[in-house]
Amino acid sequence: MTPPAAAAAGAVEDTAVQDAVVDDPAATDRPIDPTLRQRWARWRFPVVVGAALILFAVVLTVLSDQTSRGYLDPDGVNISGARAVVRLLEGQGVEVTPVRTVADAVEASEDGGTLLVTEPDRLLPEQIDRLTATGADIVLVQPSRPDQFSADVVVAGQGAESVLEPGCDLPAAQRAGSASLGGIRYEGPAEATGCYLVGDTATLLSGTHRGGGQLVALGSSAPLTNRHLDEDGNAALALGLLGAREQLTWYQPSFETSAAEERSFIELLPGWVGPVAWQLVIAALIAAWWRARRLGPVVTEPLPVVVRAAETTEGRARLYRRGRSRGHAAAVLRQAAQRRLAHRFGLPASASAVAVAEAVSRRTTIDTAAVADMLDGPEPTDDAGLVRLADALDALELEVR
Image 1 (cartoon, rainbow, N blue to C red):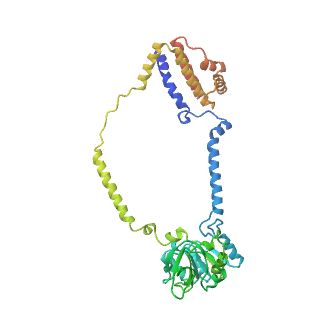
Image 2: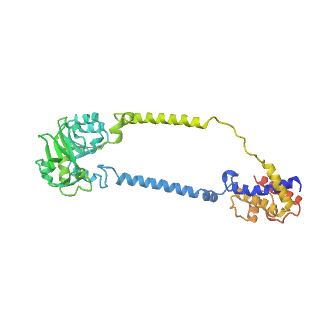
């Protein structure tokens, strides 16, 4: 067998490995001038999946924005929202102004009216001072630190929510009658009015805050929520507490207004974070020093014996020549060339030799029959025939590039 034939036969088994790589578009050239249908077939799945994900995100955003608003949100229609009581107040002629920042709450309350704070525990002392300085009537929902608004009002306990009777002479409570309260219980000075009592403690306490306006601490948010508004006297109690003035400022503290507006992120961290962080840094440095000592210096290591590709090809070629496997070598060479040509012209890997030959003849001047004979012709009878077949297939692939 001549050296070119040995190289061709020795590359047979390597060709079988290369055929597995052909399926990877990055490993071969792209098809020449693929049709629109072929492009769509290739990109259809990722395009459909991407469009479905975008549509799902849009629908989820719209639905969550309309029906899943947060706790006591004036536009929230879920069970914890407060859209129902807002509509009820507006029907009674009360102007409801939703705000999310302390600055907006102060501006809206400067002319008096009522200020509802849905989450007072998120406020900083400086922000509370700004709110009480307006002199507006303030209604707090479940405050756990009411003494920041009025020094004499403190938390006296906490329990389950239930339907309670007013037990006081506060006009709003008298008109409402029984209501869904409970939760946090409060105690205040003698001049304060405690309603909906649990023992000697009140779940609704009315007094005066540091700015001189009325202060009402609600131990439960139930009377204001969509879920419980139509139960017992909850609606009447909400109207009495929030609708006493023509102007109601509905303040929902956000994370940005409750923290970042006044303090930096570092200032908001607990005091133990700094020492713990330094301990972790020191421990990491000690561990790095210890492991570096254990690993020692970097040393080179001689690599195993490397057999060059050319030597491997020559060895396999000798084996094929000794076994006179010209037919098998020719079949593998033809199959590999046919698969590469099919991929180049956008045909499936299972395309027949005739289909590939027709595609080649349309792009080149080579006759269809000649191409089909190269891809599916008779087996070579000698080594020279195998060499000619390998050269012809190689020339054919160079022609269509």
